[in-house]
Image (cartoon, rainbow, N blue to C red; front, side):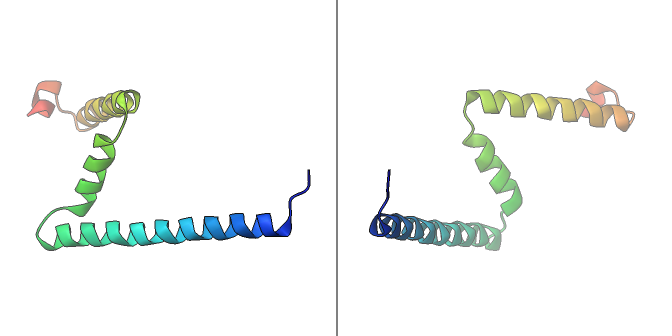
Length: 87
């Protein structure tokens, strides 16, 4: 099956436009985080919270399981009892 040069050009131009849109959205997102940071929010924590909030059920369950393991391991490494770690 042969593709014409004009077909390739059209597809490349379309992809280029989509990439430009993605770049603009990335800039807008960065500006929104910068604005939040300017009024006192922790942008890094916001990014993580938004990422977790956008997860589907299976991803969220894996994330929560990993967080529970992290909590448990950290308590053990620091020599704390689980009751102390929960506080």
